[in-house]
Length: 470
Ligand code: SF4
Image (cartoon, rainbow, N blue to C red):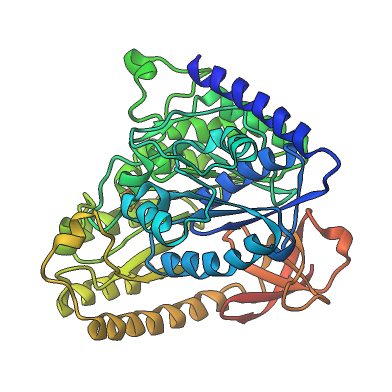
C-alpha cells in the first residue's frame, strides 16, 4: 500500500515538473553503464523524464538534463564516470544543465564523498533504492536550486507502475526480481542492490501481456539471481501461489502461454538454483530459448569455495550434462573471472578444462579487479597483474578457437532470426539474432525489421554469421 502511495505522489511530481517545463523544448541525455538491469532502470527513468517534458538527445552539449546511471561491478566504470563529469562541467557552465547521477556506484559511500568533494556541481545523486523518487528530486532542484542527495542504505521495496520508455519495439527487458543473497566474495552487488525481493507474478504477467499486445516478440527476464525468483517471498509459504505461479519454473510456464510472445530469455541465473523443475520447464516450453547463460566464474573447486559460489567443478559439469541430456539442442554461454585472489596455475588449468569440456557459445571473460567492501578485497594472496593478463590471453585464445569451431556448425543450417534492423557496421545489410543469440547479417528489405524469418547461414566471422533468406 505504501509503495502504491509513493508512486501516486511521484506521478504528482511528474505533473508539476511537466507544468514547469511546458513550451521550453527541453532535452535530456542519459548514459547507462553496466548490465541489462541498469538498462531497464534507465528505461524507467527515461519514461519518467519524458513525461516531465524532456525529449531525448544523443548530443550532450544540447542537453538541459544529463543523467549518468552508473555501475560499480568493474573498475573502469569509475574512470569513465569521472572522465564524463569533467566534460559535463563545461556544458553546465555554459548552459545551466542539471546533472544527476544514480545507480549502483552511488550506494558506495566513498564514491558519493568523492563526487561531493571533487564535482560539487552535480545537482542530484540518488541510489538504487530511490530511483522512483527522481521526479521529486528534480522538482526540488528546479524549485530550490539546491543539491539533492537521496540515498537509502536499507533494502528497497518493489515499486510498480512507473512509466517506461523502451529502447526497442520488439525486444523488452522485464525485471522480475531485485537484489541478491549470495555474497560471492568478489562481488559488490549484494551490498549496493540489497537482499532478494521478487515482483508479484500478477504484475509480471500483466506487463508481459501488455507488451505482447504492443507487438513485442522477445522478452528477457532480468534479475541478479533470476532463477531464485520467489525463493524467499513470505506470501508463498504454506503452498500459496498466484494462478499456479510460485517459482521461477512456474513463471516460465505461464509466460510461455502468452500469445504473441515468441521468445523468452533470462539472465543471470545461478548454477546452484538450477533445480529440476527449472530444467523441465526449459525443456517443455517451446518459446524459452535453448541458450542458457550459466556463470562459471572459475573451474577450480578450491577457487569456487573461496569465491563462495556453492558448487564444485564436478557439480557444474554434472549440471551441464544433465541439461544436455534433457533439453534438446541446448547450448551455453558463461562468465569467467581470471586471477581471483589465490588462483594458482593449477586452478587456472581447471578453468581451461571446463571450457574445453562444455564448449561454450560465448565466454564473457573478466580480469579480477578488487571491489572495495567485498571479502575479496581483504584477501592477501592477490595475483600479480602480469600473471592475470597472461592467463587472460590464454583463455581468450581458447575461447576464440571454440567460438570459431561452434560457428562452423551453423554453416548450411536454417536459423530462425529475429530481425533488428540495419546493421550498424554496414547499412546495406540487415542484422538479427538467432535463438542462440548469434548475430546474423544478411541482405534484405527493411520491412523485415521486427519479424522472425528463416535464414540460411552461409559463412561465419567470429563475432557474427552471414546468412541469406531461405
Ligand atoms: S550471485 Fe554472486 S555474482 Fe551474482 S550478483 Fe549475487 S553475489 Fe554477485
